[in-house]
Image (cartoon, rainbow, N blue to C red; front, top):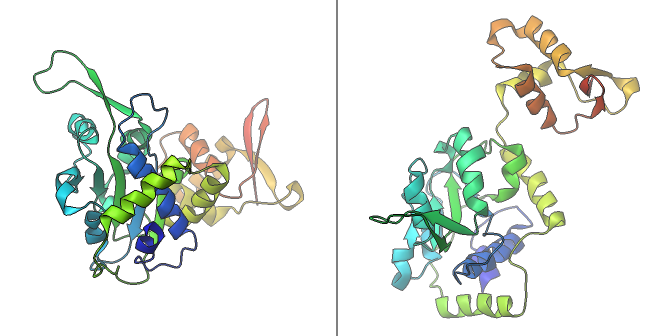
Length: 283
């Protein structure tokens, strides 16, 4: 039932059915409201396509009509207290138009939210902070493909690009759908992604990453080299000087330290530690 629901989403992603199945178990497991969890359901499906492909409808249909109070698709992440409160009250939160979420929020608040096992908030009219079980899992939609701004955090997203509209015509048997999830959890099936699966997710999500202007400038001048014979090890300061000579004031980088962080996230760019600092192998 769960994988059949995943198949209503047309995509060329060969992992999607299994990813959705594991995430769905994680969502149902989150509803059990356990206090002594170590981890929350820390991944979210990210449905990507142009408008009119029924993404939002698919998200809404994951929750039966009788539990429609438990679905939200108008969350404003900047209102942090309300978001935390919603995580203890709702069952599923859809971050619609994910591409409108700023890189700063992606890399900070949202990244922290996804891994929370419980939420600590001061209730309305309360006098002190209380801890509540987290119930909500997250799902997201986007009309754009270059949306992930934090390479180290892209393991949180199950990116799936649609090849056509989602089939939302069939009637869902929620009783069987959720019974399958509960039986799987009671059998001890995992509702999280292991290290091997996470590596596949991260590799797959590279196609959805935003390429920062700094990284674009670097790749116009340098290529990652495979061996020292094919390139040269340079420190971030030397790379900065070369880029500054070519791009001048259009190179928007506030510090060499920031450039170093960007270089760390360039796929295939080897580095080594020396007593003077980190050097990068480019050609």
